Amino acid sequence: MDNRKDKIKVFLSRFMRNHELKDDEDVFALGYLNSLAALQLVQFLEKEFGIAIEDEDLDLDNFRTLNCMDELLERKLTCRAGA
Amino acid sequence: MQPQQQTSNEEPGMCMELSRAQREARLRFRHFVHEHVAPHAGKWDREECVPPELIERLRQNGYLGSPLPVDAGGGGLDAITYGLLTEELARGCSSVRSLLTVHDMVALALWRWGSRELKEKVGTAAARAELLCALALTEPDVGSDAAGVRTEARAEGDGYVLNGHKKWITYGQIADLFLVLVRCEGKLAAFLVPADATGFARRPQHGIVGTRASLLAELEFDHCFVPASNLVGRIGFGLSHVVGAALDHGRYSVAWGAVGIAQACLDACLEYTASRKQFGVELSQHQLVQRKLTNMITDTRAARLLCYRAGYLRQIGDPGGTSETLVAKYFASKAAVRAANDAVQLHGANGLTEDYPVARYLRDARVTEIIEGSTQIQQISIAKNPPGEL
Figure 1 (tube, one colour):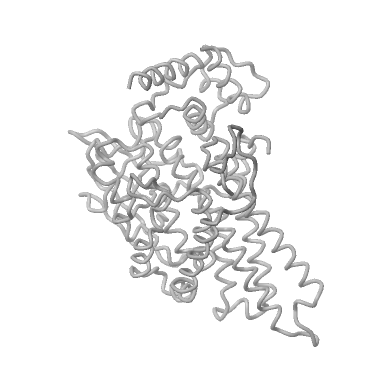
Figure 2 (cartoon, rainbow over the protein chains, first blue to last red):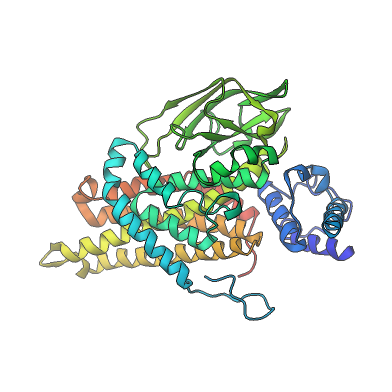
């Protein structure tokens, strides 16, 4: 699980240089992510973890922190494994 | 560029050659443009109209909706082949290229973020271009600051009511579906509005300098009702993810379109400078002319390589494709303007007439530096979203 968060953290580091992102820090409140970066984050999560983010997943609470993103991935991957 | 060709489990290396299928497709696109587009582009430009017969030809050849997945009803073109199509169309006529850009960007956003109900209702028709799509973003007082749109939507009954005004909407005169960015519940949202919706009206806009034939319109939404299923994505994600996805594709398309203009300038200049004589020799023998030609050649090739790079990343689903597309659009649009400016200069007085296409190329090239994010917005965006290592 931590491995997933590490991968996301590495991806996000290009937008937040010199900031060590904590698992529960709000990436939007920090002000580093603009709309383009948010779009790229979705693309990254889909490609890196082999999931599809649908329109119903568009909720800031799914992307707000590393923990939130990890929970989203957990739900998506569990759902895929059960399909 | 063959991202699919892997001989082992390793990541694919960089292949700088087009596949046979891509080369053959480019030849088909070139023949189509040579026969059906380029000879008429000047007339369409003067008349400010791409004719319906040409749009039908584009549709019949599968050129509209070509980047959408086959199972959605689209053509399933890979990103590179789509770029080649865009370049070839722009070599002939940027107004035709702009139809491809706006239709595909909206159809893709609809398939990316539209609800199942909405996709079932209009998705396949949009992917097949049986319904033409356009993006309704710009307003009389809102351009680069897209988040400042004033058009509003409020919930009413089982849908939403839109009120507001959009301007400079490419192909707004004939589009069947509009992806409209609005303010809703204090956030940004995107709705798909059919042209036959009650409370929707449009007026042609004339007299624009570049891509003159792209049937611009102003749109009015006067208590315009759409069902709730016409919301694309979620409220709050209209700009960042829905229109953002559309613009991401639009920038890719415009970047290739700018390469097409630059190539058209180069073609025109190589021919003109080889045939016209001044001071007893062809223009192409003069070293200052050679300098302009060389700048045009290197700029065009550099822009095309940036587009290949962006296309490759987009094809493999790499999120870096978005940043590389910013760079490609930024460079290619500026290169197109430089090429067109030099092309007019090399043609002298002839370049200022409608007897030669280079004045149109210059007008059309200027548009590429403004649409889908101006050059100045690209500068801000690239610095904030730098691409990764090559």
